[in-house]
Length: 329
Ligand code: 2P0
Image (cartoon, rainbow, N blue to C red; front, side, top):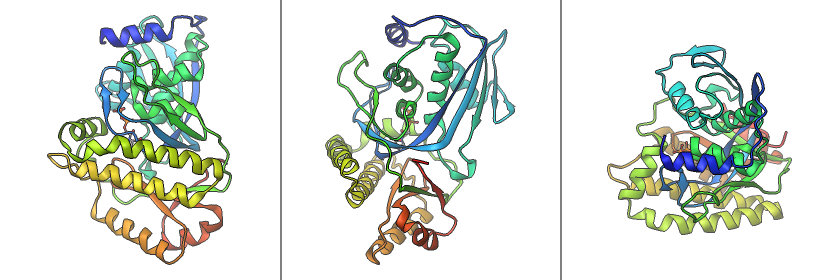
């Protein structure tokens, strides 16, 4: 553990309670960014270059239960995980940031995100872990502080301590205390997300290394923070006005601009597969035909569609095999 991380954790826990329970548990929803986080300004405190804005995935997410134990153990979806496995290593490394709670933990994690959806679970995973730890230790932290602790595990996890539309403010200070998520107006009942799993191919480069490489080597990345700031403002206003086409255009533009910065890194980061390109064109054609559907893509090959309930049937007809998520139930 870095001294700087330890100091940060102490700062967050300064006025926290300490009524230890036998076990702690929590659920956190996964999220998809409409305006993306790509690039860090500080690795130890996991501070982003730019703010981001996401929508939560309702009941798709992670439930975690945690207990103190004599030896570490980690379970995922009911199956014990080897402690050398990447998932267990990241989980236990994160818990080492909290020696004031205990030395060894028994962690049980259930993902309600269908594995077939090809969605990352680190966002809901670290958010649920922090909230379960808060429950176990009796800290009683507010969501702002929980979001800052979740951020240390994974940037996108800072957004998963809330439901609905959420903004993670990048902040500017070196101590990381102004980089946290906050909820925006929620409830857009007929908002829909469609998930198209196109490839199970392993990512050539993980998000963390990918964003570092982009920041270090891509000329195009220099224009990214301004684009991200602009897109967030457009999307925020569109959420307030329930202006779906404006939201969709800005989200699609943002995702493709992020991929342009990735491709212009060296060595290039090409997360899109041939099937992704086919679908990107298909979305353009569908829209030219009058169907109001937009796309977003994370650091991988799969495409997420954005549309409203009134077009759900038409969208499912065009994009066979689509898994439809209702973020607001
Ligand atoms: C996002 N992604 O805003 C962006 C869009 C991927 C592309 O957040 O290094 O797992 O753990 O802070 O949060 C994925 O990166 O990265 C991500 P770390 P994280 O959702």
